[in-house]
Length: 466
Image 1 (cartoon, rainbow, N blue to C red):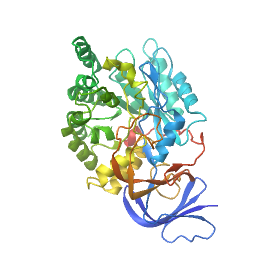
Image 2: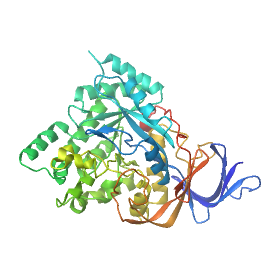
Image 3: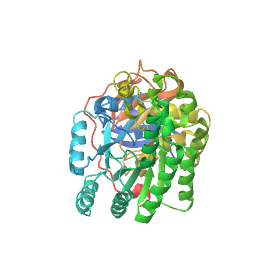
Image 4: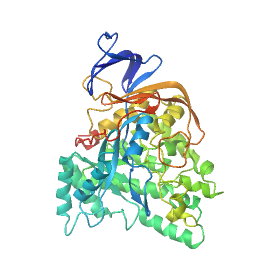
């Protein structure tokens, strides 16, 4: 029986209106006022906002890192995403040096098979183009695009593990440009950072907060500038992931003002957490906030919010890379370099952006939808997602803007033993969530089936510039 969502306010990136939404099968069939209820299962959305499901384009589920594996697998991570209001995630297949992209894809599809509970896509993290001139790897990029993996991640940090040099980065970017692919870049000067880190360890500066002090905003800004310059030389579109500070933002804006094909995201942690408040250097508990790029001084937050408002920053993602505090973060006790980098946030993204963006008047509800739903779909080649409109996938979020909720590890679905936002009270939360027409979250509780999520073949559209 078709489902009719009645009496809500439909909010898309381009406006809002009081309208009903009719779902037939997995698709939105009709959006408009006063759709007759006869023959339909009716969902009363009085007092609720009817929005497209959230899209988190930067997650790390079941990911090996630092001698351990991120705490959320594809089951727990995607359930947490759904409970938080997201209906799609894009994760990363990590190519290991000496191995092919096809092997990485097979590995990550194996991790998600039978576990993913909402739809998901993959970026391909490239670390090796193979022997000689790299022709083998460059040809494989075409294969990846054919398989629906239209974005390639490049690391300028983590030497000897994930970091590539400028020459390889140029080769990948040039090929991506030919394929209309999008290059995602982790922009930090890893070579310089490693020298600073070694010096700190030699001086006995081993506590968690030194992780943040070893990775300066200048190291991120320099790499941001270099990544954009190389992408421009290569004729490629580039997307800077997890941009964290005003210095890097300045480089981004300068490039955009020159008309270059560059986009960027930021994450909730950089918008609301700070070095002063969360990592003052007083306790081991601060290991909970060791992620990369690190927390920044509080004065960076206002420029990031302004950039979200004016469109310089296009997306809010999470970089969800969760590790338990008790038995995983503890691997680095006495040496911050051994603390697994990452934090949990896939469940809280929409709550944080709504509370500190919309409720404060910095963002409109429409801009919230643009940043968290519509722009991710447009940039990453998912035309069937991100909009409440006829013909689109029925990924629909019923959001209660007045719901009071206290964020806590005691109630979260993420598989960590802490929350980065423990005890924070927010006003605004997901009430019901539909994924391809199926009610998977009811009154804030997961009711869907494990493994129902589908792999998304994404279009190659050069980040929306094509």
